[in-house]
Picture 1 (cartoon, helix red, strand yellow):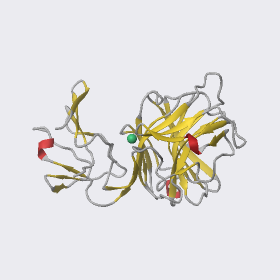
Picture 2: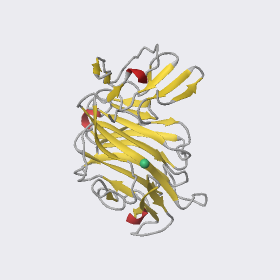
Picture 3: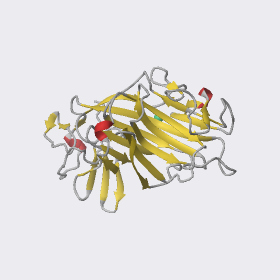
Picture 4: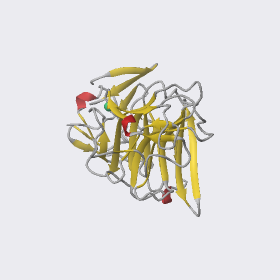
Length: 308
Ligand SMILES: [Ca+2]
């Protein structure tokens, strides 16, 4: 046992290996990740701007490459009250178009979004060929209501269709939180800090193709997030600590040693894993089980990918 934290009155939280989250469900292979530990954006993974350019037809920001910063171990998208390219506000955005694409899998990022009238911050994806819809919104947070997570999918079925929901949680502008999305062919599931917050099968069969992925903050021009006003703080930042994308398949993702598990604990495993080097037979629920697996009434075991 490497770390024990009390999380509830009678509970312990046991972290094995590093403090990283793990995609729920079956075997997963990491296909894309960025910890943003350097001093500049990794151009082999990302381009600055949106996949199609530096502006949108429905918002009032323009993407200035100088507003895409990698510092303090984070990707920081700087938001400024500074006009350019026919738009009112300077913002940052990054995308993986033509550099990384994937169909289906598990997407996860640790983010802190800015509060303030006019901001709409997102982690999302669409087809690499720019056909639209479909679209996946792993997470959208609007600055005027930063304690609410919007989770939406869009698809085409004789016209644009969408299925959205939201969850009122903590102030997502106050601290970092982990936003996860299971993209399956039959169902889509959203997780926040490892807890399932939404699932729907609506449109799932039509949300397919090679997608690329983006982080950005739109600014103004739409009633949803409003326009910046005198209370909007400048500059503000949309911060991304890390992003990890997984694809189903491969070898068991989790490996633990018996000594890592407290004596007397009966493990109710919902993840493929090895124990003392032997694969533990498990039944993977589909759609997936929650990330946090209750092991006993007294103990929760947060299973982590092994780096060994
Ligand atoms: Ca980081």
